[in-house]
Amino acid sequence: MAPAGSEFLRAVLHGLAQTPKTLPCTYFYDATGARLFTRICRLPEYYLTRSEMALLQQHGGEIARRVPAHVGVVEFGSGSSRKIDLLLEHLDRPAAYVPVDVSLSCLQSAARALRRRYPGLLIAPVHADFTTHLELAQQLPAGPKLGFFPGSTLGNFDPADATALLRRFATTLGEGCQLIVGVDTKKDVCRLHAAYNDAAGVTAAFNLNLLRRINRELGGTFDLRQFVHRAPYNRAAGRIEMHLISLRAQTVRIGNAQVTFRAGESIHTENSYKYSLADFTAIASNAGLAVRGTWIDRQRSFSVYLCGG
Ligand code: AVJ
Image (cartoon, rainbow, N blue to C red; front, side, top):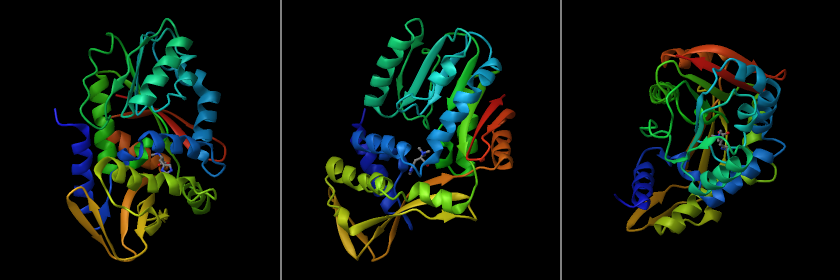
């Protein structure tokens, strides 16, 4: 098998050869990036995590009652697994919990904590990128399956990819599965903008850390002072876009390759799509899933959907 680093190199060189330049947002989450993301989740401006936790706290029991007993739970992009508790505590004798994540350190510490808290529950972590084809049959006992995809991670995918991803989750989970998806809502642009342009600059550091990671892991020569974070809302597309803007004309080396930037040129690092109820229902239905339950808080800050095949 090729070392994981060469896949990163290939993705980076591919993205930076595009017009406009892009970098894949999956690579935000090295150890530093994961730590910065945890700090983002605690920012006063970043309402997403708090709103979703509150929804799950408030409605976890009601959601769990719609799920059969002995369900095998798969969480796609589980990170620190801090939300699954709000379901596990209400589910009727779940058969297994399978966290899937690219960060091995997150996965291991989450599994350790969950094993302590639920000594009777089979915890079977899978170190993988959830966007790739997943074979979970060995991890999961026979019986009904529940997918869990919180945090508005779906927002990272454009509508066509989001549809394909949900369809793939349903295939992985199998006939008769259910899927809980948490997505951010369309709302006042000022609130959206503040959440991705926080006063403390943590989101900027998170975005710039991608360049730091390229420097460290791929022998890059990015000067982090020569790029700035921008995160505008693209109203037509219904998404926040994260960019790194080159402050001047410059050439950067990455291993043996060279990449040149114009002054003001952007690297588009992330999309974060926002969903109305109609937007989400359309994506789910194109993926062959029906929306069976919808939970939205009073301020309409965030939404949680229960889908079924
Ligand atoms: C983890 C993809 C949901 O889009 O809000 C946070 C990532 N980027 N601040 C999001 C993120 C900038 C986050 N997701």
